[in-house]
Length: 406
Image (cartoon, rainbow, N blue to C red):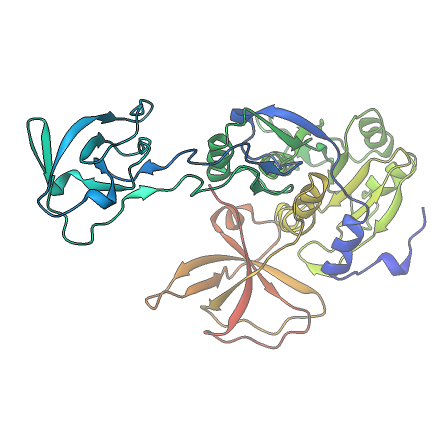
């Protein structure tokens, strides 16, 4: 493995394109409907029948024939139609059937008079709904028809889509297999939470946040034991792991203790990205091992790792599940001025708010140091500053990437 100038200092877009190259859905499995939330559809969902499957009453009231209606006219009460208990016969001339919301409209009836406009007197009922009453009937197939494609492959199942699938009567759903993602943090300075650190050590935090993000983004994350600055130990930790993707944290720069890439060279690492012209996160890299496992190397500083996870890991997981990997930015109005940027594009942690005029605003934190986890915990967006951008003034429109907060 030798460094290639063509793979260094790539733009974010070029790096992302290289990371996504060849990434496709890994496989398909069927899961129970109640287990499908957050999964990615692997095939279209098609309605096996219409919804509703019959003309249904939109209100509590009385079902009659429109041709029979006249204000004040009396009708004979013929029976009742309730949800799940349809009136079994056709409505005849001069008859009215008591009907409830969602119940099937009896054959022959084409008008439902709401109960507030009806006066019952024993076995008869009369209506005062004006000359042109509202029909109050939901037509069969009004939501969707049999054979309608309800959801396309690649859609992420959220609670609303889950309801749509259930309304079509489907108990099992074909979804993409979750990518298995191994996370390895490296560095002699790291100690797991709960253990006693030496004065020159810090608690390892990056793998915990990344595991949570990976699970939220459709992957199946598992954390490997953190390794020190030992190439043999790093290679030994990765070699036996059964994973579609290995994400490393730290050891990705050019110092004497940055050993991840040399360690993985022994496993046949081929690089696709060596560095990215981004701030924070320049040491981010990507490649593949000779057995086909993908590798994404993230910087050791927590903010750098989390920024680059949003920019590169999230779209990669989307591609591996057959979802849309595009990173979509929103526009917001800048609250505070910003200086001109340098040669690298800058992704700043920021807070979003709605101003008095209903406009989305972005307020970047004054301290953007890549080691500050506390700032990230309070941010709800990343604000993009393009390379070589001039100074920005309060009120300028900026690009933002909202963060998925709870």
